Image (spheres, helix red, strand yellow):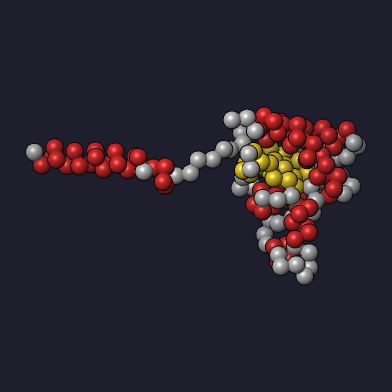
Length: 166
C-alpha cells in the first residue's frame, strides 16, 4: 500500500511539474548549418562578383561558427577576422560598424574593444528573424569594412524572406 501511495504522489508531482515546464524553459529559433552555408556562399559570390577576395563566417546566436568559406586568393588572416566580426555582431546584436561607433575613444562603451574576441571593424552583421538574433555573418578581405558589410548585407537580404516565415 505504501508503495502505491508513493507512486501516486510521484506521478502527480511529475504531472504538475510538466504543466509548469513553460515557466522554466525557453523556446528559440536556431539557424541550421545548411542555412549558414547558403548565406556564406551568397556573401562569397557577391564579393567575388565585385572582385574582392574574402573569407566569410556565419555563426549561431552565440557566435560559434557554423560555416566558414575562404576565397582561394584571400589572405591567411581573413578567416579569423571574419569569425571575429561574426562573433562580435552575434554577441552585441548590432553591426560591427555600429560597434566601431559606440566604442570610439571617449565613448562610454570604449572599453568593449579590449574584450576578448571583439573585432571592431565593419563587415559583421547580426542575422535576425522577427526581431530575434539567430546568428551573424562576418566578411573580411574587401578593401574596406563598408565593402565587407555590403557583401554580408546582400547575402542576408537574399534569404531574409525565408527566415521570416512562421
